[in-house]
Image (cartoon, rainbow, N blue to C red; front, side, top):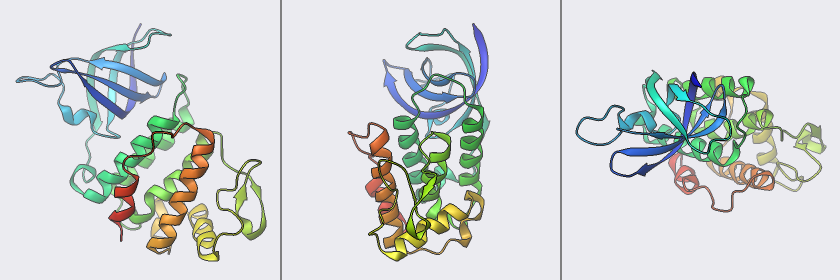
Length: 233
């Protein structure tokens, strides 16, 4: 079946001389692995820039349910980044988010609400300047709502928890709890209203990664994490 779908690039590896195998999160088919020919070489059909982390694509895919690797007929870029590839801070955040999504989004099922959230978040990362130092931490919190592990019950200090683990444990410093509550209060579009320092941001990031690790296989780690921690000092 030939179908057109929007897609988000999560990861790719080079295959043979001119091809790649890419992992995409698609609007119609969820997570899919695809083979794309003619990416490298003297006259590539598809430029390598199409496969940078979080690039937004329109894909014509020969989709067959149950197939391990899908085939691609055509690809076009539906949104050209203005700043992500050119600012170290944003490109590092994009790499981090793509790693998180690669390890987290496993279902080969459509989820329109989740896809819309991701598309909007990626475009916002590209366009927004104020509050960008908190974007990746806020994104992790917001994403919890769309992957089914958001901790809806409350405990003291109004910090959210579930049956297995608190995102922020009750013994954490008040500054960390306050920072988490701020990030829960404001959407990604209003992060300029969040006032937390570098140390608090790092602690929040570590707690959130531990929370994700309880639910998903992060045994290989997040390669961009240490770089990200040093970007906004």
